[in-house]
Length: 396
Image (tube, rainbow, N blue to C red):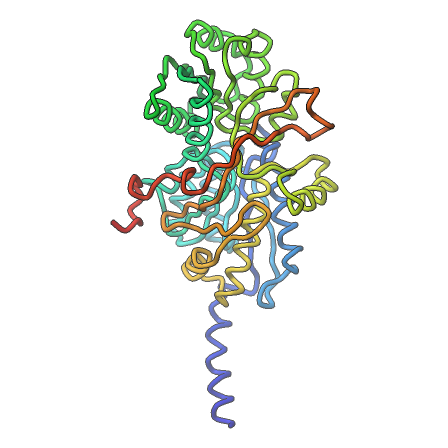
């Protein structure tokens, strides 16, 4: 009896020793005050803290800490902070990461350091394509899902000629590329495009080019403040009387900033909306109590990704990055965003998406009641087929 008890205790020690230290540290890296602060920012940090509290504040007896960082939309700042977090501050996983250029850079750092990174705000589909990593997970959405879902739906409604208003950096290029591919593959035409700098104030010259194109659809391949400003100005120019507005990446806070009068009729795709089911409504009301606004898709993504990560640590019995990543892929994803989702070998989370249309002021029942559901896009349609993947992790 004593021999077997001693053997069991001996086996238990290595399992405990697999923790890198006596704390699990989660770093939320995003834009805290700039262009993407509303869609992610402090709200994503609060979402991570809510997840930790809901999990019980500890995992396998170790406390959990959430650390916030501001990358200021500068790749050098984001990369340096990621390196410091992994090397000096013992951050176990980095979350969120709006701004796809920074996300791609941090993906490389995480690969080098063999530490986890989970993207809830980055859109560029290359994160699970040619830039994929065994340590990277693309959680809430990507440019391919948004482009495929929205592009197909608008084409079916007669929008067969497109003009792109595109922000001139990684995510804008990915939006235009992926959506353009869908449009052309289904018999539509891309009749023109124009690219604008990040954080543009005056879109008048770009919108005049869109109007002159005589396209049926104007697609906004930008985000954050750029999206809000360009849609407001397009509405004031009267463009939507002759062109169908499509937002490739739109968040609830964008519609709140724009207002229903200007945004009504806009077509968009998301994997989360606060009013999509009772669980989502319950969690979103709790979020609202602190943040005084309803959560966005990326913020809900940070919450659900944090829970899945902590459950994986608990199931694996360690915070070792390789073992936790394997456990995250082995476990189904079930939460208010996702039913029976899973993480594919390229790091892409498979989940359904919903095509929404922005309500008119007359349709809305009050603040934050902005969307009406148009269609559900199944996970297998929204995700890029593995046969087309450039990810070297995909088995051929």
